[in-house]
Image (cartoon, rainbow, N blue to C red; front, top):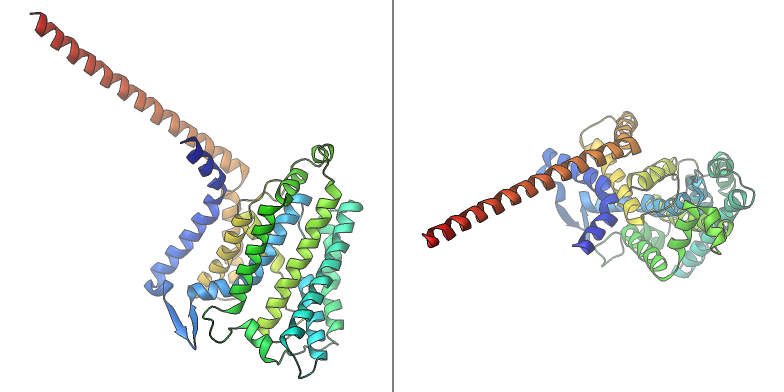
Length: 372
């Protein structure tokens, strides 16, 4: 039982995102019982579930990076969409220089170069935050304002098109594989992150720095290096998300690619039960939060909400969630839960005592009859 209770306590932070997820699924089931229907079209799975996994690919990857940055630096990186736009612009330019002779090797090298670009930009943000002590949101505001202009210049002030077969396969499906490629890439990325967190002390160091940097320093952990490292990881996450997004679209739109996705990434972190003030974190919660946001977007469209009004509905939904997840409401819920547990325990004890009295009384009567 203690082990079960400890396991339950570790998963308690997932209660909110899972509850929201279930509510959204129920709403969709009420709207139409065929919500989980999956069909095979041209050798690939299509339907609501595959579409959600496909649509949330970039957001899931960015939410993972945002979780680490938030946990260590106690702030958020608001330039992730712009980093993705710059890194993907570099990728596109490298591929276009290959002309019509684009091979898998060309794509792979272009991808690695874009990841290096993401690392360099992440290093820029990380240096400002960790070594110069600039607030994360202020430090990343620089690229948030100027990043798309840089991407636009790299593009040559046009919107280049990726007209090659390999990019098309990466953005859609590979013949013979029933699952869409962005879903597979997201699963591989999640597996790599889980492996890193399981085999290294990254989680311990990030949480220690986020909870108390001074205490972490006294224990031999350098908070500056850890915060810097999380921004490097965020840069790579942005580059990967940009790579997926540009291959999905088939062209590089430096103005609209991953535009305002940082708001959804921050929301996914909060929705996943993570504190935006840093400290302990849950990658699982953030991933569930990202998929929940994608389901919310598609649910509003399914309910025929005007696309222009979706943001307003989403804002109201977010306010409700944040109020429910606020410390005040949590403390109140904890008090209510403690009272319920006290009442149930007292009731059980009274019932047990009453049962014992009855047993003793019956035993006394039986003993009296024997003496007679």
